[in-house]
Image 1 (cartoon, helix red, strand yellow):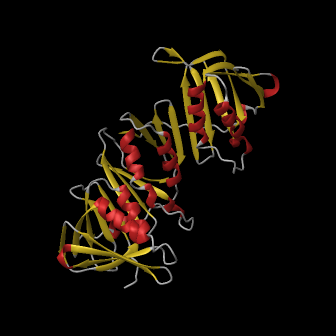
Image 2 (tube, rainbow, N blue to C red):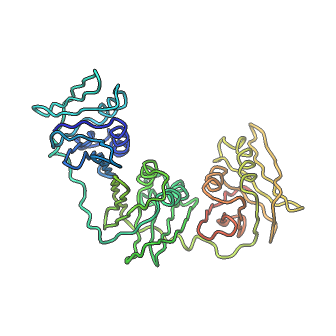
Length: 378
């Protein structure tokens, strides 16, 4: 195998596939990156058996030559060393040549590295996915869907299913739900492409976070293919496979209250900053809890009290308060995470009592909601 490639393209591909490579693997060859040169270009693959990423560097793009293939072939190179080498190479082009016994030479300018390669035949094959079940969404929308839900997945392995995001497709609508059983993030999006099937899958939160980092902010469509135990995201020159979590995702619909006793509309930024300030003295011990109470004149009092540190009290003027008076306590971190995920300058918070879950939504937007369980302090 021998080819010459533009360094920028190679580096981008290496960085993308590195997101799937881990040093903690029971299969030694997976600590490497597989490089395959064909007549059409060069394909790099990284995998940790949960996530697999394949990045393709085409021979030419928009009339510019990117790769010159001198001899086709394949090799697996140690990811950690190869990625560091590519980052630090001196010139804009890189030549990679595999010689006898998998010895691989990497040349750039006056610099030459020799790496011991591994046999590409030993590298596990990526799942072959038949593309019967496919739907498409714009890249930027996909990134928003991930951002507005993935933060609410559980980090605890006691209930593995909650470490993923539940994706449901029915009636040409995608619903993404994440919960760690103390809070929940939900976002819906209409699909413009006709999908024949209904799906109900759980994608590991970690996979979605990595996918989001790789995708560019474009309106290009991403193809999403779902099988029994895998999901494949296909973007331009990029394939991203993730295994799905096994098991049934809990029915979250019954968690979401239908009625409310108190509805409050506030300015998102102002409210977020007030919670942020209150949390400064709530970091110690009790899970950074802040207290929230309605007071006369349409104001809300936000306070936090840690006996050995001190206390903070702040009033925020609401846009409107409808319903009963209210005192409630909740985690400042959960509230701030939820507010950062919402879009819109004003939000409505709907309470059904001091110990019941409450909802946070942008005004006049039915596609997204955040739910938080309060903390018992009063």
